[in-house]
Structure formats: C-alpha cells, structure tokens
Length: 469
Ligand SMILES: Nc1ncnc2c1ncn2[C@@H]1O[C@H](COP(=O)(O)OP(=O)(O)OP(=O)(O)O)[C@@H](O)[C@H]1O
Ligand SMILES: [Mg+2]
Image 1 (tube, rainbow, N blue to C red):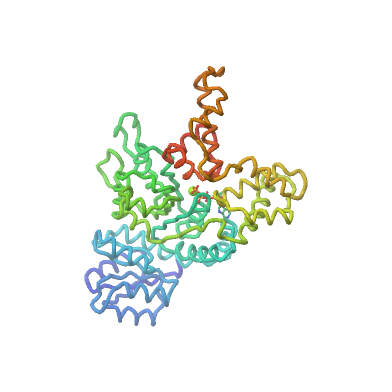
Image 2: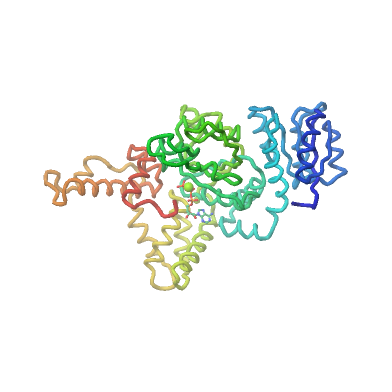
C-alpha cells in the first residue's frame, strides 16, 4: 500500500451509507474522510493527500462524473471509483470512459468494496517504475508515431479496471498488447487467462468459460473450474470475440454486469473479479448491425478502445522489428547474429505486409534459415517471398478447374486411396488460399467460403497453425 494507513475520500449525500462504508474500510485498516457534496469533495482534495476516492454519481450540487474528471485531471495518480445504481451500465461505462478506476453497484456488496480497494490502493505502486518501461519496450517493438501514441494509451489503460477492446488486422500484435496491458496493470501478479473463442466449439465454450459441477451433463464426472473463475483477480483475454454465439454472449454479459457466474448445473452463484480484454480482427460494429453480436455486450466490452495500425502504416518500425526478430531468432537458435544488406532493408520497407508483423517475422525466419553467411541478402528474402507469397492477391481460380489441374487426370483412381488423396487436395487448396491472402486466415476463410472456425480446425488437422497461436 502507498502509505502505512491509506486515506480514502468517500463522497455521498446519504450519511448512513457513508458511515457504513467507513466502518467496512476501518476494518481493512483504511482511514476515511466523508464529503456530502461536490464542492466539499473538491475542497478536501485540495487540502489532503488521498490514496483513493469513492463517489456517488448524484450529488446535490452536481454530478460525480465532474469529480471523476476533476480528479483524473488534477490528481492523476489517485484512483477514483463510482457508485452506480444496480444495472445502470450506461452510467458505469461513461464513468470508466471519463477516467474512473472502477465502479461499485448499489446496494454495496462488502466483498466488492474490499476487492476494489485492494486493487485501487496498489495502483500508484505500478506503472511508473523503470522496470515497466523496460518491459513495454521489450515486448512491443515500435517507435513510429502511431505506436508511440498507442504505448502512451496502453500505460493509461493499464491503470484502470475498465474493459479493453483491441482491434486490428491479423498479425498486427493484438495478443502482444493484451499481454502487455496485463503485465503493466495492478493485476499482474494474478492470472492472465486466454481463451480463443474461434478455436473452441460452441458447445464447449460455455463449459470452459463458466465451469460445471459433476453430473451436469453426461461425461461430467467431476466439478470443473471455469476460465472466468481461474482468472479471478486477474485478466480474462477473449481472443476473436466476434466468434462467440449469441447465447454465450448473453451469459458473458451477465457475468460482466453482475460480477457473478453460475457454473453449469450449479444452483449457486459465485462472485468473480476479473478484468476483460477482448480482441478481434473482424469489424465488430458491422456484426452488431447484422444482429450477430449483441449491442449491449459491444458497449460493455468497448470501454477502452485500442486500435493496432497495419504494419504498412508504421514506417521505420518495419526495420526495427526486422532487426529485433533477427536478434531474437539467432539467439534462440544459438547461431551468430546476422545483418540486413542495404538492398534488403529497402526491399523490406517496400512490402505491403497483408499478414502484418506475423508475415514479417515469418519472412525473416525463412531468410535466416536460407542464409549461411552473416549478411541477409535480397535473394534470401525474395526466395521466401517467391515460394510463399508469389500468388497475386486477385481472385484466383480456386475452383474445379484448378482442382482438376492438381489431379492431373481426374478420371484416374489415386494410388494412395481416396481418403489420403482428398486430404492432399484439401491441404493444397488451403495452402493456396493462405498464400494468396498472405496468411491472413480471415480472408482465406472468406475465399474458401468457410467459417474462420472451420478453417482453424483444418489448419490444426494439417499442422499448419502457426506456432504463436
Ligand atoms: N510490436 C511488436 N513487437 C514485437 N513483436 C510483435 C509485435 N507485434 C506483433 N509481434 C509478433 O508478431 C506475431 C503476431 O502477433 P499477434 O499474435 O499478437 O497478432 P494478432 O494481432 O493477435 O493476430 P491474429 O489476429 O491473427 O490473432 C507474434 O509472433 C508477435 O510476437
Ligand atoms: Mg491474436
């Protein structure tokens, strides 16, 4: 904690409620001051050094939101949480956007208050240390203008409890950013639990998220802790959130609003405290308009919005990243480090990178494999490009004509048997689609007329899923 006995300001015009909170906080060893209106709260702030503040939203002389803005601007290190009427998500979200650290539903649940203050009073201890600055530069490479702006936002976002939504094309670094936010947050000592919503079948995902009790369905021989519960105290990263079914979306929304879950087959609700980070490479707003994603959940997870720009818009970062990958891969493979020839640098700077940072990393990895000497030349980079990305991005004939070419002669009976032959053809078609889309799996799935989930399943089957997923 920041001081031996932390000091918290409680702002509410209901005297009894303040006294009740004061007693709860006193049991936690926290000293409190009480203000009954906005001006008094501002005055108290100018006179005392608070470690945290909890304010009601409806104050006799103004809105608690004004206090949130005032504190965020003038005392940026002091976490301020708001008290909201139960279920009023819009106001809760507006407060988070205004800079509130978190919110507590009324009537106040003592356990929530305890959790909130434990987190709030740790906040000033994180974020500003040299270690964390180091961490940020080690994990997220990039000095271009949009990346510096993003890093700045990440630092702010990391301090809050608000849900974070990360968007960006495939391979732009959404996983990296989610990890970084967790590491820089006051939850970093607690678990960071990742669930890839696109990789798990609809039937399984609810069991995974909420857990179950034994005998809740055939095969449930013992209780299983859900991922939300495993993330208790920490972060739950829902990757590819656009893939969640509408039913799971409603259940997730409830868990987020009420901070409670009920495992499958259980009568009991369990309190959970987790921060949600979600990501997608799809246009979630469009899915809301199409009725495929709940609007209320969209607003709930979308409080802090981070967008990762495509690599082609990051200028000098391309070379920074390339050099970072060369250094790391050589270290990992225990070989002497290599350098890029000048013409290789120019070449790398001129690519369009539909597969973004992942494509650049793959290109560098292949070039290192091919380069025996110390200098990575154009031939090493172009070779890998020729082999993997030579197909034009325009629609290519992924149709019966191209298949019959692959087969050479469609009226022959394949010697390896039908199953194996079909698998060979399937793999080839998948690879074609992936190469044509520079390994952008969302685009490839679209081209192949299949769902993203189904493509992922097939890639796994053929061992074509990239190792960083
Ligand atoms: N700024 C960065 N600095 C260092 N490595 C990065 C950066 N951005 C991405 N990477 C690396 O690029 C690869 C792809 O990144 P990541 O998995 O985070 O992308 P993504 O946006 O989550 O992609 P997808 O939408 O396909 O899930 C990973 O190997 C990651 O470590
Ligand atoms: Mg990802």
